[in-house]
Image (tube, rainbow, N blue to C red):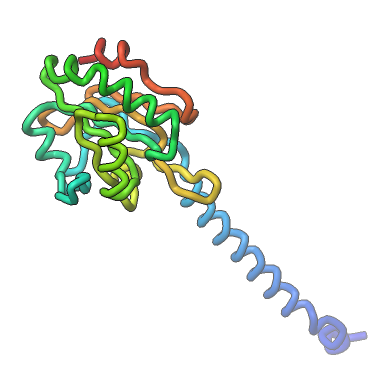
Length: 192
């Protein structure tokens, strides 16, 4: 048997190799997509700067640019999962009890969730909160802060607290991947 008879016996090898390469490429693309959606948890840390363009929506549907707010007074920025979360609402109420002390230390308190403005207004009124609640509807800020994650097919922020100075630099950061755990108000006041 010569070279000619070998070629007749193996015409299926090229399509097999092509299928294997396409399959490998598909697996690689899938892994890249998975790595993007399940990005490693890397929240911003002290020394990091907030972006100048980061804007939220207030409960009365006004734009609030974070850096402009920080230039006015240093910030205590709190990210919470939303008004549906009982742990979040309890934390918002605890923060409300120490808001006077936060202000006396020269800081302003702002709480951020993905809730739309009408839900923010209801949450604020229902609990008598004395500080602004703002919306990050597409979680643009949460993504920048490195606290966005996927839970049950839904994007949510990890509950977090960032203390930001008047130059827009983070001076303290606390994030916990367990949504039931929050920074104690005593610990927060100790930082200010």
